Image (cartoon, rainbow, N blue to C red; front, side, top):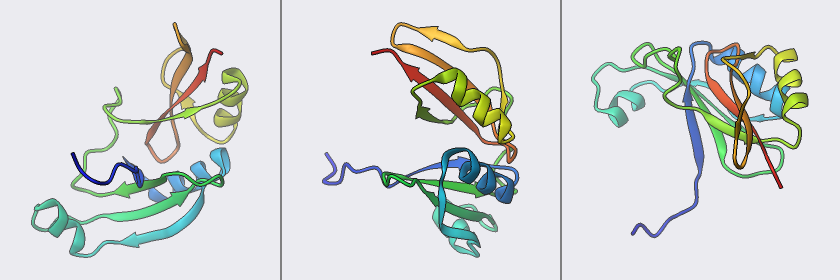
Amino acid sequence: MLATARLLHASLSVADLEASVAFYGAAFGYTLALPPTDLGTAFAQMTGVPGARARLAQLQASGGGPALELIASPQVPAPAAVPPAHVAFAVADLDAALAAACAAGAEMLGEVVRFAEGRSAYCREPGGSVFELEELFE
């Protein structure tokens, strides 16, 4: 077992870094911890892919916790129609949260689904990443 168990950040691939930064700030109150930055050769070194390039921004939630890292790279496939990866946010009122997210520029991908533990929905934000809103039953 690794000695470290604390999650530092979650990362999403985005097609439009600035649009994603603006959306997560407006919809969820994230602030810039690291503004959009060209990673230079560091991305190629870390990924082992010669010539790989990326721009990255790191966002911090107002209440603390793990950061949200957004990465735009021509070598990383654009977010797919069926999301292979996403982040999930717990909300108290799914309908109100969906309305607020859509007002901030998101679109629902499908329908609200009911599970034994609650209701949830996938959305795509203007920069292309996918997030889930989940209302848990008490």
